[in-house]
Length: 205
Image 1 (tube, rainbow, N blue to C red):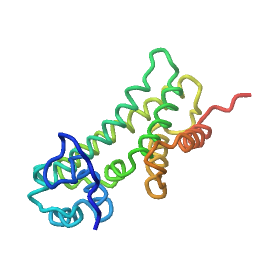
Image 2 (cartoon, rainbow, N blue to C red; image 1 turned 90 degrees about the horizontal axis):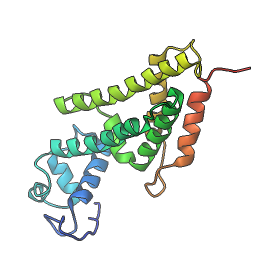
Image 3 (cartoon, helix red, strand yellow; image 1 turned 180 degrees about the vertical axis):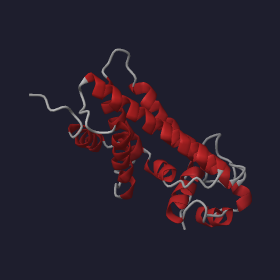
């Protein structure tokens, strides 16, 4: 059984030892181990070592836990896309930034992004989250097309296919990566960015 993390402050509610953030962390890890659909509130209660009523001091339902977790990872990834935009900068530079920073988000918030990537669209909440993920992939495809028009990326590769392959490589990190202290992995981010874009760059004489 997981030992409740210690915490202090006004945010603590329910059984002493769990604040809302600590509870969310354990719940997300439990969803990732057993699957969201297969995890009941009773299972979360046993994992946390508190009663279901104590969980309800923090959240109203299992669905709210999922909603909070998905919004956290999606908001980080959407921020990466938004912050990468630089007026007047070439599209390939924006693309480099998005790929690099997306890997950093993934390695720094691995449990939350893992939960996002394992969605199957089994509820309206999940369908909306998947649509937000698709918007990111579509933006990457758009940037690849722009970089192709600029002559920075080769034109014999379909932009939509390239964007899906790029995000497939980034997303596959959740299957093998083991974080060190929960910090973004800058070296891995640079490696992924180079591997992805070097194969797409125009070979200049």
